[in-house]
Length: 211
Image (cartoon, rainbow, N blue to C red; front, side, top):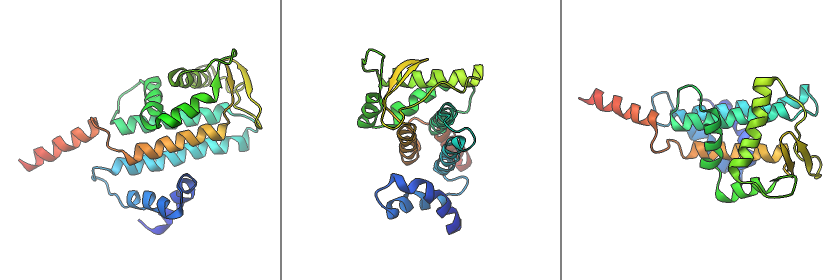
């Protein structure tokens, strides 16, 4: 792959690394992977994360003030990356894999930071599972009911009171985006997961070819 390809992905990922050199060390080896390499799926994950998060970034340009549709694409990204990481190519299990993404790929500190930004109307803390299920319910309203308005993250440092779902958000869209991208980077860095169905199939084929 040419350096132009590296630059394309580098622009997206560099803000999540301490230096340009670290970002290059993340992107460049992945770009060199060819089809058939055991970690080729990690390259696909790197590309797909950038594409889906960039779609979320583009929504406000055509729907100013809308944060429901960006949330949808960020959750689609989380689900997709978790399924790729786990070698899952079946139907369904969307909610489970969105949960898996945040449970598998965010550190304990990141999970705590995420949940600190979400409370009940009574200002009671929520668990990570409750937080993710709340976001997922907004996703379902959008996908199944066509409701893509009425949900907002924190605005300008002011907590946002939501009545559907009933939560108070002290978390901005950009902060949530950051959790998703960092989770994607962790998923990419740790691919393949163990056990991993896709990896098991690849190894079975390799053993069969060697007989």
